[in-house]
Amino acid sequence: MSQQLINRSPDLKRLRDEGYDVEVRSNYLLIKHVPYVNAKKEIDFAILVSELSMAGDVTTRPSTHVASFTGDHPCNNDGSEIVKIKYQSEDKTLDRDLVIHHSFSSKPPDGYIDYYHKMTTYVAIISSPAQSIDPNVTARTFPVIESDIDESPFNYIDTASSRAQINVVTRKLEIGRVGIVGLGGTGSYVLDLVAKTSVKEIVLFDGDKFLQHNAFRSPGAPSVEVLRQASKKAIYFKDLYSKMHRNIVANDYIDASNVHQLQGMDFVFLCLDRAEARTLIVETLEHLDIPFIDVGMGVELVDEMLHGVLRITTSTAKKREHVRGKNRIPLSEGGGNNDYSRNIQIAELNALNAALAVIKWKKLFGYYSDLEKENFSTYTIDGNSLINEDQL
Image (cartoon, rainbow, N blue to C red):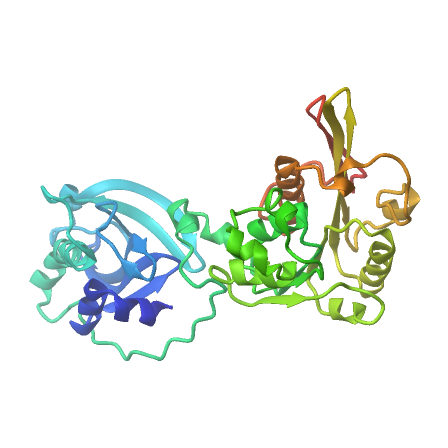
């Protein structure tokens, strides 16, 4: 992605063509080997860093005039700090092996017109004292440019994580294969959230068709023409989210003939209401020692109002006995009035159920803090209460 982006963006390409050692990493622009003078009046080298503003696959005008630095604070040739750019000094990890120590502020009256303007301005300020000591030192090193193999799971750069400076946290979700079984209301929202993470492959399982009633409890707003196609849900959602996330695989229902497709999964979300299939899948996942989360919803119409409970059950190698010991997952067909199975339009409950499941999944991988370490939780609508049980 780095070289492709540089080739498409005239300002970045100009930096590279003029010999600067340019890299784009997780939506940060890096200029490497920038010479500067440290407090000991010695010449040293470090990396100049800027957040990137993007419009698809090309850069736009910089949204901030601030830049950062991985070295000591740059000094004049007498060892005194260059105070005209001094802004903030704080150690901050932006990405793997990318730690900044200082941030600078130098804003032209009309701002920077592009990243060539911004980065060369800062390089000149930082490097001038070093060049006054040794005229041969330069940031224009003309490095060898290697071919760029894009391993990103996205079709475009995740600028949200870098803007929030949480790339180190985001990378914890760079896991292999995540399966989503069932793409009804809740499962489709799970996909919507998982597709915005750096999971390498997302595998979908659902043989139902995407029909008109599904449009009212799933993310997005399909057109009449799309609904008339009556595509299978797995195909429909694969095509929709492949615009953003690569490596999405569509499959039919899971049954005894193809349950082996779960082998090799790193995690699975179960979002289906067929107890027979759920039982088969749960037994298989337990046998393969694959962690999973099963979601469920029970909604009833009482006095012309909806009442109900959302359920999130987690099963990992560290704790599985509660699934059967406490019947935390319905593994047999049950009776009773369940309006969810009758397709009442409750998109917000589907979205909430999915969000709670994905939050728990992210906790398991260290993305979020997890003090309770619950493996079973319920949300009750009428009391607006969330209860955690079955802690480790």
